[in-house]
Length: 168
Image 1 (tube, helix red, strand yellow):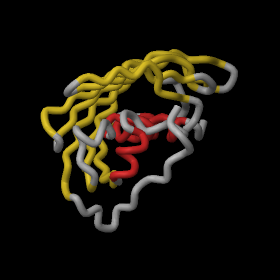
Image 2 (cartoon, rainbow, N blue to C red):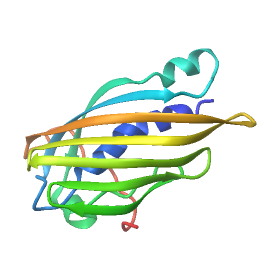
Image 3 (cartoon, helix red, strand yellow):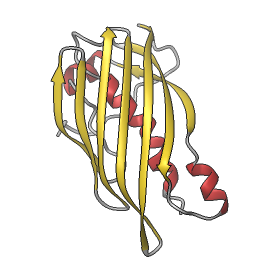
Image 4 (cartoon, rainbow, N blue to C red):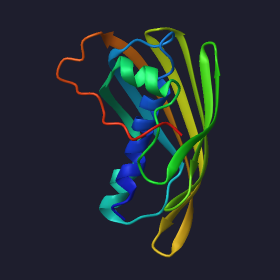
């Protein structure tokens, strides 16, 4: 059951990926991301694990380097679990993509992000699928909504995330 925590946290990580768009539309430096996760259908799990699944609002600071923006352009490659970004469509002021998972969690989500300027972004991810709980595949559906605000060109003590190999 301890596999739930990474998937819940992944909503925040995915929001970070939506933030990285292009050198012309995003600034390198410190960003603050506030993400709210809501379950429409949560898997049925016992006791303490259930409390870990509860949605809620979380805020994190993320450091984006010019190299991250230049190298990955649209969405950061995802290395957590068995999920990936597919079918990216980048337009002026927005991006959309599919979030596809195979493995413990199987299904598909729709990722959308919009920005009004180089310092503000709003994003959503709506996912439907199944989550393996023991021998049973239980239906899941969840939504994350995020806002990202540029704070400073200097990341201070916030270190950039380690990134996997080339974008796929």
